Length: 505
Image 1 (cartoon, rainbow, N blue to C red):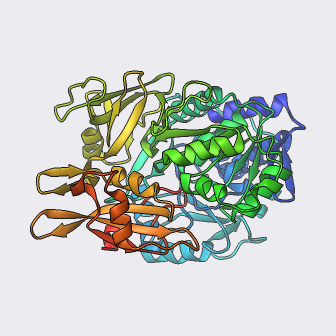
Image 2: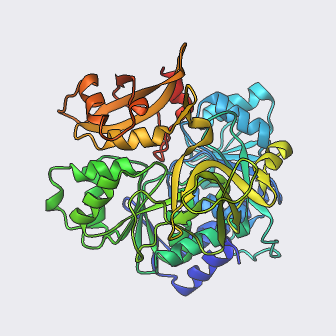
Image 3: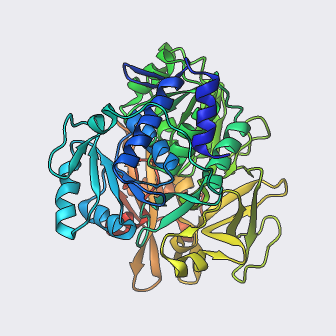
């Protein structure tokens, strides 16, 4: 089974049910199937062949979903990219993948058109907004206009065929394209849906970008594969719009980074909304402070479910069980079919409560990095994918993240986890968000620097914050420097860009 086949099954089972709601537009499963068939025929007519790479540079919209499934159906390879990338970032991915086509909007179509001339690339550009062709740019509406609505599914491909190249968000170093297969994407989405008991009755809110792994697998694909309804918005528009949408659209499932849930807890008009349909609140991409989890469950009556994963693992590796024991600070248990172990620097497995590197194997692990055999063999050793994350198991088999290996602050001969310092700072009543990094020091090698974003209307001094940390952290872990900022560098999915953070030093 693969994603297009499973979606076809839902189109046949529930043809008149709403598959997608996009503002005033409603698309039934029957209509979605027709749209995918039509675009698949269009791709053939444009000369898109099996294994051709096709870039999707789009915000959340129905065209993203239709294009995503049509490319897979024609046996092409989907390459979703952030529509807010710089031209330099686009150029790097284009030169890496050599795409046959790029699907984008009226804002970016001229950018890709100019870039094609600059680097002598021969890709087609399909503009979802244009009513007609111009230059090298094709109109999405026009290429679909005269195509057949029927499509005979081609010979089933191997479940191990690569169907997506998903590039890392660039938290450090050069971005790499993770090669994800039919089996990776289908099994991860279906397994997640099963654990969360997602059914055709669920209405999921997709605000997280579909061009990133969690929004794509856990919200978009998981919902459509079980026959649920997907309500789409083009990104975060503030707490009022979010709460109105949950109430008016009877949302049952929503995913967001921890900072969004922390913001909701302080929203003054929260009690005027009827949120009784909301039953699944998923979070990830950043550590969730224990007090946020506890206050959220008390306020909303549902558990905040934290998960862990990465682009290379499709993305989910672990999930806090929705109905099992909850452990604040933990990232939960490995998904069925996914193995996780903790190893030392010689790849030897360590016992419970000992810190080591998290390594993963199972149906979710990518095939490798696109055109990077050395990077692939470096991260995928002895049959395991090495995440670069440090963690440990407790005696009950729950996994905890300590930090990234490369993010450790080395002060003299002492190793300091930025995450541990951040968790202590999060408990300060005036701090809304924080990020900790090392700063060069001529004596100690590195000292601790904390960037702090205060809650609106709150005040604090560096001295007061340091004093606050005295009974929460060993003295050498207390930040020597505290810098107040108005924002922190994060991806649109809420993941902290530590590489960008170091540039702020």
